[in-house]
Length: 273
Image 1 (cartoon, one colour):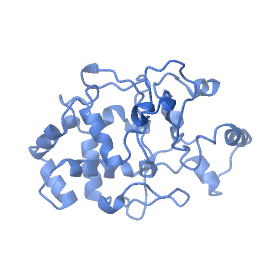
Image 2 (cartoon, helix red, strand yellow):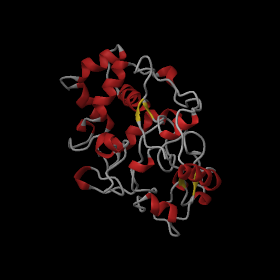
Image 3 (spheres, one colour):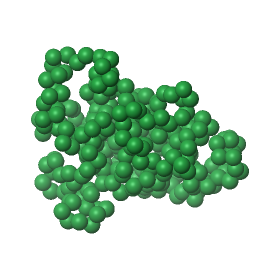
C-alpha cells in the first residue's frame, strides 16, 4: 500500500520537518540538528565500507537504497563479513525519527546507538568502534568533513554516530498514494477501498496509525519453537519469548522477504499466514 520512500523535502532540503499528520518525533534533535554538512558526511559514511574490519561491508550493503534501504530479497537474513550469516532479516529504513525503539527486539532505545551494534557485531561488520574512529581520523578526506559538519577538529564516536543519524533521519516516507488520498489529492479504486476496509478491520490494531506500526511486540505465530527468543532477550521476561516488534508497512511492497527471519517470501505468503 505504501511504497514511496524519499528524502524529506522542505524549503531547506536538509532541515527535518515532520509531516503534519505524523506524531511528534522521538529523536533528540536538540543535541543533533540536521545540517547539510552533517547529512552529507553521514551519507558518505553510510556507503563507506571503512566501518567494517576488512573494508568489505558498509551500512548500504544490507540497507540498499534502491530497495527502500532494505536488504536484497535473496537474503532472508543479513550477510556480513566473510559471508557470515546473521539470524534476522534486515529491516527497511524509514521514519526513524518517530520510532521509540530499534531492532526486532527493541534492544536500542536511541537512534544514535544503532550503528554501533552493526559495526561491532561479529557477523556483520566485525570491527571495533575505537579502530573505526582511528581509521577515520587518519583518512585523507574525513577530518575536513567532520570539521565542516561539527565545527571541531575532534573526531570521536559520538560525532560519528551523530553524522550517521543525520543521514537516516531524513528518510521520511510520507508520499504514497494513500497519503495523497488522506489529503484529498487522490482517489482509491473500488478494490483499494475494499482493501482499506479489510485492513482497518483485521490489521490496523498492530499496524496502526500513519506509521503503520504500533511499535509493540507480539508473537504472531510464525514459530512454535523459538531459536530466537526475540523481545525476551531484552526484557528477561519469559512471557516475551517469540515476540518481535511490529514492522512498519511503509514501502512494504519493495522490501521482501518478510518476518524477523525472512521466512515468508511474498506478501501473499504473509496474508495466507
